[in-house]
Image 1 (tube, rainbow, N blue to C red):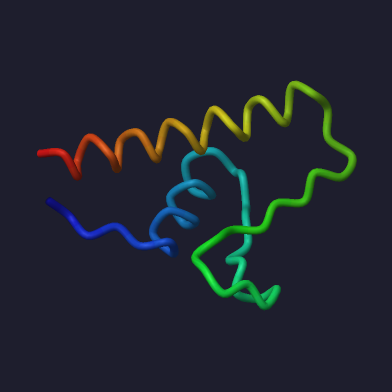
Image 2: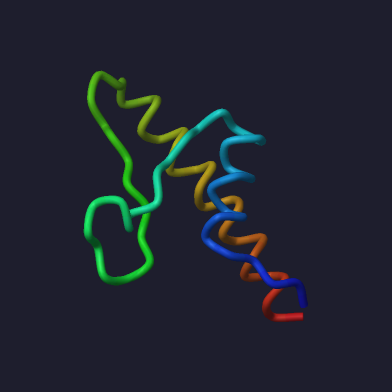
Length: 66
């Protein structure tokens, strides 16, 4: 099983999908999180971001279960 971190996730998401999220710690959040700005996007964009996030997280989950 490989070790995936929040930074790995953010980097992979940006490289594979051009979706850039920020670590939540920059916004004084106590638990692991990411920050997404939803300003000026279309409904299609919101859906594409959600699908890209879900795809990567599902791959991490599959790797974890091995």
